[in-house]
Length: 388
Image (tube, rainbow, N blue to C red):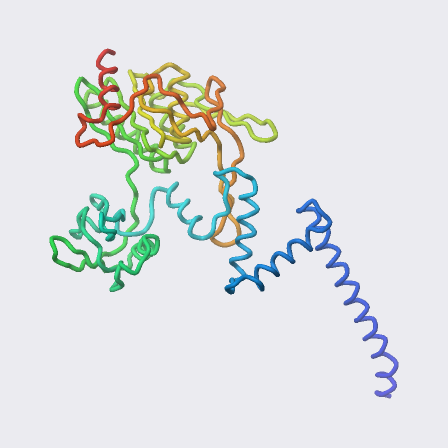
């Protein structure tokens, strides 16, 4: 009975299984072919992709990791847009973007640099942060990190070793005056200062914004109010070498220096227009904005709005000319895509992408500045405000 069952049913079942497997495989191949046809615009898209992958993985002189080739294909897709501000973000780049916009990270509060001999040094020990509190000073040479000599490390790798989970420790071997000392430092959440301010002469306040990160808006409001309490009736806003940042943060800053109304509009590919407005929280005061070639994006939004609304004077040199809006989309894991989605328009509908903001008063800086008196742009700003 059992043998008859096998003879009767097994061959037909096996035959049906094989037929199903063949149909499923063909359907899968057709679907894959159609997908590659759609995304490549060519019926030979799948053949081109897999042939290229095969050549790169089997013919290149050195073995290449599969994930390297795959990430390269993703990066190449975004690079093919030919737009410099759009890019595929690997884990490191994605984390760097987050750190820049959040204005915070977990570490010890130092900025790394190199001396003339190429030795790794502390370019800045941020005041009040763990490294400075432990006794590390700007200019100290970092000899080793957790016992690993920095002469064997790239700057990027050294930075990654110094950063880490909050509450953990890192040991820095530091040389100062030809003497080496070890510092065991506990990592903390570091908030990078992006706004600094002080009073100058003749009731002139000075505020420097290094970038437009998440904490910048509240920090600017705090310093602005403090300077007003000290008698500020005029303001120098220094946006030189400020690469930009968050559009919403620029809007928060504009609330204090611009009248109520649009500071910038953005228009996407569908033609939809979105306006970002100043709330006009403070009455406008005589204002000079300093810009240079390093002033970009959100810095140019502020400078362009000040110029269009005629509430201040722009001093310095022509800005960078980054008049586009980017958004960051997260991919699975710690990767993402930064993609340009629109262009900025100033209140007077100027598009500054590629051209930048031309100052009302052009002033170049000398090659070397040893004191504030040598800062010709700042001195011109003070000169203008003293006549207001």
